[in-house]
Length: 121
Image (tube, rainbow, N blue to C red; front, side, top):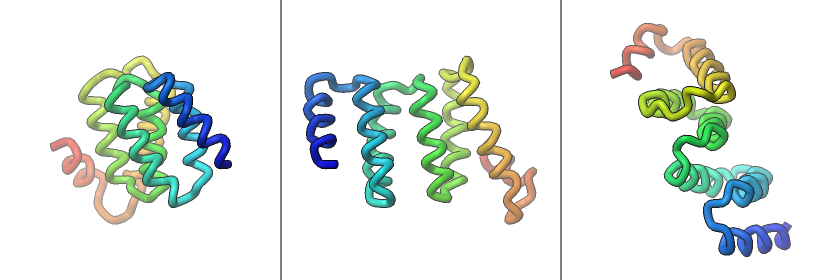
């Protein structure tokens, strides 16, 4: 809806970086299919730069990678976020990390020891 996009952009100018504005943008972009995927990825990158300790944004990034079949990048993001240690109190974060790692290790292409060794280096 063009009107919704118009008002979200107006609100973003008035309140840049506000989590509610991010949620509205995310909702609009996720409805656009593959075209909105790139914009959603850019939005998530910007939000992660502004709010690296926000579990919701990190979870969305991992889910976006997984939905796009980029499981390697999802695992890398999980491991990088764990190294920073900013999300240690989020059950939602660890639920997504566990699901992502299980899905990654279930891939038949490489043995689990080799996969984990590669990512932990």
